[in-house]
Image (cartoon, rainbow, N blue to C red):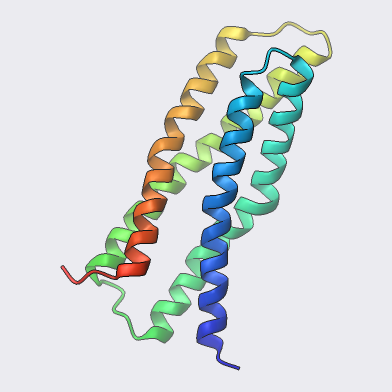
Length: 156
């Protein structure tokens, strides 16, 4: 068994899950959050949070572990410029993703309280939604750049 190609496959699959699940979650949350039906909004928020913890979180953990192993076993230099840029964009994505998860949890809580008939703070919800939406752009943009860097491994 060739461990390098097995780990590389795991790395590619986990990168695909981070990106693909992230796009799916964002789409689900975006349209669910804009629904006028409270039950749909609560469902979308619950499933978004669940999907982030079931799919995105494990893949976000696998990425740096498998990436480090591939660098070590692949004979790459840890300080190759393309790798340093990759680390920076991964850090950018993480810096955006962590608050996004917390925002999703807060939005879900607001919607669950509303579904129980409690007071709903529409202004706070709208503010959280805008911040959630805004943070998604640099995170996904950074992931696209990381994909390009992994494929091309440019030698600047």
